[in-house]
Length: 363
Image (cartoon, rainbow, N blue to C red):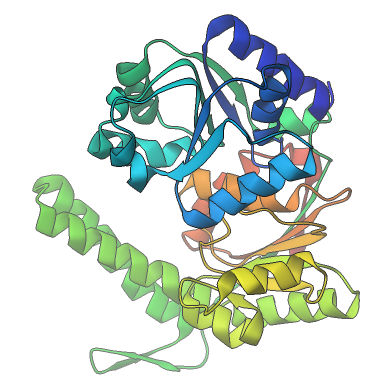
């Protein structure tokens, strides 16, 4: 089944069941379900909820691109729901539904009623689904993960290149608490601190211990990410020389700015939407990203991706991969430090992609 047929079938299922969750991988065209539905029901009053203002522009662009009228459509942020108390709609669309778990609880959307409710998201937790069902009743849940989308031809077969590296254990270039360490030695200390913090939290699950555990994990994660600078730079230079358009997902704002210069797209980027427009207009061919492109952004003609930061969030990895998988022959580079927590975090990639598309290289 191609993407167009999939969207049409989902629109028909929404019409039949009135409550539908499309938990589809990024890149499968979830917004197309809304457009198909409204093309057949153009008089339906529709409210689309989105996380951020830039998502509003994306939706307007989708309606315009496919020639679907917005005469009876409003697109608003979750934060504006309080202005719509006791409003009634034919169709309510909850876009990027993972945001809804907190936003919907706070903004009391139960005062917004609709005959049809459609929730969209790549990865939606059980808790988030329970919130939706508490507010709007039983949903039909349709899941399409990355692996299923690839195997069924909805997304193209990718090439995942895992670049295996080792932390240096010869030069003591790092200092912590008055001690000098090699990169491997420094990692070992940070890793032991994470283990100790986890044990302490398991013994006493206080908010203070939770924050201590999270800080320790973040320090280890950022240390590994920062050590990948040279590998990322090498890969990106090769992509630049090959005239490839790519996204590089960085470990920190500092890394994105250092490697991407004026192509850094972060929460600190001035006029970030103008930079995104330059990318979509082919004025630039790369973006160095920290978080901002994970959800809700419309991007065009991406050939490759570089995942410079691995973590334990399956949701984030799925969305990063999905951004790149809209290419005809997507290639994703994943630098990994062997014998570190990276090996465990790599599971968020390998768990979502059929093994035949994953290649391993010594780097």
